[in-house]
Image 1: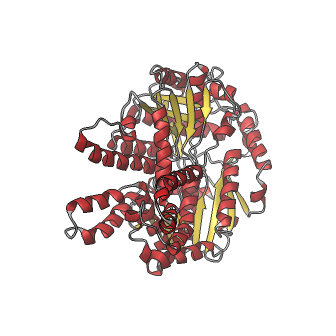
Image 2: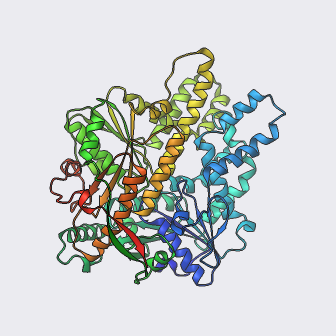
Image 3: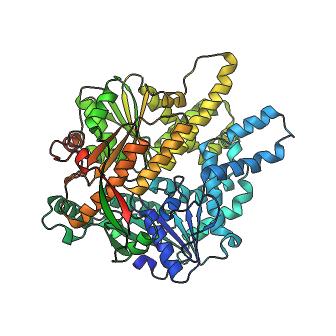
Length: 602
C-alpha cells in the first residue's frame, strides 16, 4: 500500500461516512505495530466505534489493546471533554460570584459550540504537546465523516485568526473564555497540519461517484488550508472474477468501473491504492489483520435454521407516516448507510401520493439534487447550508443590533460574528425554522452522520432549557424544537443501518442516546441488503450470510418495527428508481425466506 510507504508521524484518515475509515485506520495501526512501531490510534469522531471494532472499551483515556503489542487507542469523548472544559472555566468563580451568575455561565457553556471547542482543544494538544505523545512513533487519527472533519481541521486557522483579531464581546463569551491562553498551541497545530514531513492525510472513498466527488471536494478544501500531503484509498472494489454468471455482481462491477473511470481530475494526481471488497466482517483482530492483504481470516460462518420475524415493507412504514397528514420525518444513522437516498425515497413516495412535502438536509456532504435527478409535483427541496445560514444570521444581527452602535461598537460586533461559534447559532436557527413547517406539511430531513446530528440535538436541548427557564417565570405557553422532537405524533425518527455489525451497533447506540433525550425512534430501515437480492457470486453470498445475524439482532432486540430494502442492480437515482426502493416488486425474496440466524465458528 503506497499510503504506508515512509509513514510520517501523524496520519489522518478522512472521507464520506461509511467508506471504511475506521477499519483502515485500525488495520494500519495493527500493521505499524507489527512492524515494531509504537502507535497511538485516536478517534476524533463524536460517534466513535473504534472500541467496537477492537472489541474493547476505550473511552476518553489512552487504552492499550491487549492482543496487539505496541498499540494504544484513545477516543476523544466530546461530552467528557466539554464537562472538563466547563469545570476549568466555572470552577474558579463558583462560590465567588452569585449563584444566578454562575448558572448563567454554565448555560452559556452547555451548547454544541462548547463541545466542539473542548474536543478540538484535546485534538490540538495531541498535535503540539510533545509530552502527551513522546512515547509513540506514530499518531493515527480516525476522523469523523468529511463535513465535521473539515470543520475540525479548519478550526486551528479559524480560532488563530479570531484570537488575533480580538474575540468581541457577545455570543461566544462563555465558550471562548478559555481560548486566549491557547493561542500558541493553536498556532503550532496549524504548522503541524501543514507540514508534509510530519503529517499525511489519506482520503478514503468507495468506487461510487458520490464518495469520489466528496473526496475531491475534501482534497481541494484541505489543500487550501495547507494540507498538501494527500493520498487516495479506494475501498471495497468488487473483483472482476465475481461477476461470472451473477447479473447482480455484473451490474455492480459495471457501475463501479464507470465511477472509477470518472474519477475527478483533482484526485488523479494523488498516489492511489485500491482495497478489494472482502467477504468477511471487518470486526475483530483477525479480520483487521487481513484487510490490507489478499489473505482470508480463519473465522468461518456457519448457518443455522433459526428465523427472524419478517419485516414490514418500506411502503407499509410510509403508510403509517402518511396517516398523520403532516409532520417531521428524520432519518438518522451512521454515515454511508444511505440516509440521503432513503430520505429522498420517503419524500418522493409521500409526494407521489399527493401530499405536500419539503425534503431537506442538515448534512454538509449530502447531494439531494443528484439523488433526485429531477423534479416532482408537491415536492420542494432545500439544504441547510452552514455558510449561507451563517451569513444570513450575521446580516440579521448587524441590522438589528448594529444600527444602534457607533463605528467602534459595530466593528466589535462584526468581529464577534466572525467567531466559529456563530455557525452553531445560525444552523440551529435554520433547523428550528424547518421544524416549524411540519405543522402544516411533511418535512423529511436527511440528517448529518450520527455524531454531528447529536451535537445539533444538544443545541436543541440547550435552547429548550433556556426557554423553559425564562418562560416558566411568566407561566407562558411555549413549544420548543426539542418538545416537537419528543412528540411521536409530530416527529417520526427512522434509524437507517446496513446489515453489518458496526452500523447496527452505532444505530443501537444512537437509539439509546435519543431515548435519554426523550426521543423514541419510530422504526428502523436496513438498507442495501444483499441477503434479499438473491446473489450467486460466492463473495456476495458470503456477505449475504454475514447479514443474517444482524437482521435478526434488529428484529429481535432493537426495533419495534423495521423495513428491509434490497440492494438493487441500478443505482437508486431519479424518481422512478427511488419509487422502486419503496415498491421492490421485482425482488423475488421476502425477508422471511432469508432470515436464518448465523453464528461464527472457527
